[in-house]
Amino acid sequence: MLIVQAKTKDDHLKCFEVMKELRPHHNAESFLSALEQMIKEGYQLWYIEDEGKAVCAAGFRFTTTLYDGLIIDFDDFVTAADARKKGYAGILFDKLVDMAKEKGIKTIHLNSNHQRFDAHRFYLNKRMKIIAHHFRIEV
Image (tube, rainbow, N blue to C red; front, side):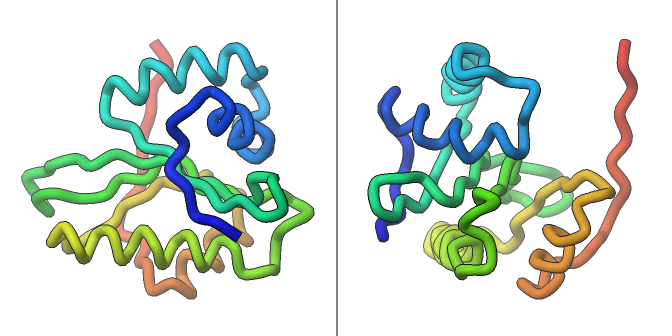
């Protein structure tokens, strides 16, 4: 098992196999295209590889806010359905918490769709707190 920052097209395609469970509206081409732009904007994609396959992936940005200063802001966090309940998400989450501590970051933020109850249970077990509502308007 390896924790890897996705940097190559092959890495990105490995991650797509996991990420499509969270973002099913993407195909490989649209995923790679969006990822290319997101990386230019500071997005990082990390994943756990086990037996040559990505089993868990997390995408985030370092962002500075007026309310918390420098934060890690998750866009994506997902484990492949056939790899759940094996500890991968906890390992990757803890790695990112360690990364935050090394950089002196005090908080990690993420948004999660309201129906993702298993994910919410995981986040709450990791001592995250529900602190806000996220609003959006389509224009």
